[in-house]
Length: 379
Length: 137
Image (cartoon, rainbow over all chains, first blue to last red; front, side):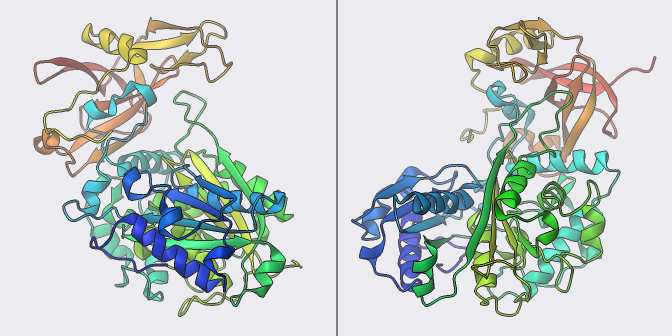
């Protein structure tokens, strides 16, 4: 990992190069050992900021696997899935997966960086005329539908923001660590109703890289391995007509079922979750679609403190995107690995047999999930 | 879909969406229908999501619908909307089934509310389909 900053220092490719070097060193390997590189380019980044030539910048000249993986916010989890498949098929043995982004530029604030029209209606393009700008709006639309469908209030969203903040208070890497109460949440103004600024991710500039390798190689590395037991994807499409609710019935359900089956577990076996949570609403929907709460009951679950420190199902234990740091799919992956390696200073979880780690992209159309844990042979 | 110029609030219209925009200028709500399975589809589809056919026809919808979901902007992200806050953008489910995104004019938008079309003028250049609460029977 690089430092995570709120000002622009160096371009994304340079951050990526630093993170790749750190990951290789952390794994006890040399550059010449690396035979695979999977690049997770931010959908916001220009190609010149995150080119294929990162291979050369990072000094990697012996690759049998090289690709940019583009699946929006689900890309980082997908790089790890593709690396796993490549290792299992024998195409490569030691693969670096890297994400880097610099949404904050010298002359562009993070708010401006994300202030683009959100293509909800495909080729129709009507969003521009309707003033339907920023991804926040798409998630506000999902949130309103969710709250109306289940007769809930924005306190459900606030509970997610408060839960994340309580974890962030314990995490030195997190950016927003000042205690947050439900009263403060309720008093905050709406940005795009029903969402407030506190429901939105906190962007930073930075890079995160991980090394994926086979079990025997991993055991020789100086760090404790994070084992992968299952993985899945789900992409349910965007059908805007009666009988379909793409805003709240997402591909997360399919991704979870496939991953649980592969791991030989059920949702009841999950000890903790690291969700991609760019907006508070997505944590509620994910808790339900990944089978961890009944439909419409995630809000009560979060309000009861079950996802907070000391709760029965810790969620986004570094503060997540809302209070920790928004580096897209690399945020949940990084927190999962720190927890599994017992290096989550101040917020370390005890029981980590099965951790659910997810990414989603677009307006929650694209989903990818991993089941990870500490033991090679599971109980 | 970044917008650079302050005066751009009208999309570059793609060919597949043109009948919708042409209908809108004549105060019609245009949707599509699959000629193979009769499923009604939102405008600007290429293939029927139900049966996979690419034989899609355009037709004029009744126009009436109900609010499926909505958002209220309390901050402007484009100069054109600076003096229009707060404004509401809704997803309207038409009687035929397809959903359209549109500005909503009226007090207290609610999910499930019956709505009817309201054709508005944009900068004297375009007609834009918006929605308003339906008149009581």
